[in-house]
Length: 77
Image (cartoon, rainbow, N blue to C red; front, side):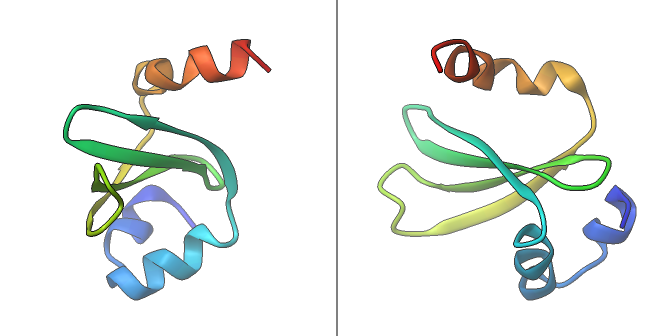
């Protein structure tokens, strides 16, 4: 599945697709928490409120520079 196919799925189907991906990491900002998954040829962030009480959106992307916030996690392991 490519990124455009993913973007056209319902939220339920997007959630199912992520189960077939690989967990990469998570990060926190002042207002949100993001969990990153790698699918076949792209990445998807699941964005939640900071306390994980509410799902906000899926954020699919292919731009490598958007992985930068996760690099510190991979360097420390």
